Image 1 (cartoon, rainbow, N blue to C red):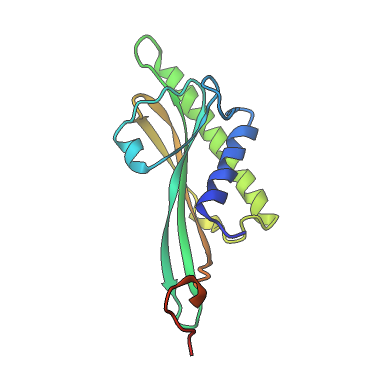
Image 2 (cartoon, one colour; image 1 turned 45 degrees about the horizontal axis):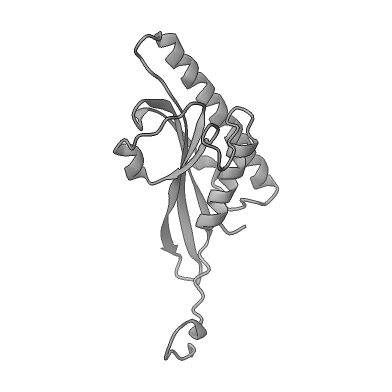
Length: 172
């Protein structure tokens, strides 16, 4: 499957919906647990209230590599975080450790789902060796959890089609 911004967002929203510990319900204020955010929104602390574990999907970024043999590759960097709000006032540090432990568990569940789907050829370009996990928090006011980064490596499919352009002639 070719990864596009839409297939990427749809895939992870389905994960947030089907994972029992996240339990996202689209259109619900109480159980909305899937967010697609730019990294700038995460870093600048846009206010959010994550009442349960939430999946924050970051937009993909791409780099291109030309192997000089009509073999242009697209390297897509992807990332998501699993977070939950933690209010340090009136709660013990053990509560934070529990939040981090559960977030780590959910990230590993998602990682295993991605691996399974890679074997089923849904994500054939997934680079298994590119997975990295990082503790995050506090972000978005007071959320803590884990961020997972990884990448896809696929053909870029940069075929020039003259019909897409005004006043262009076919390549000779």
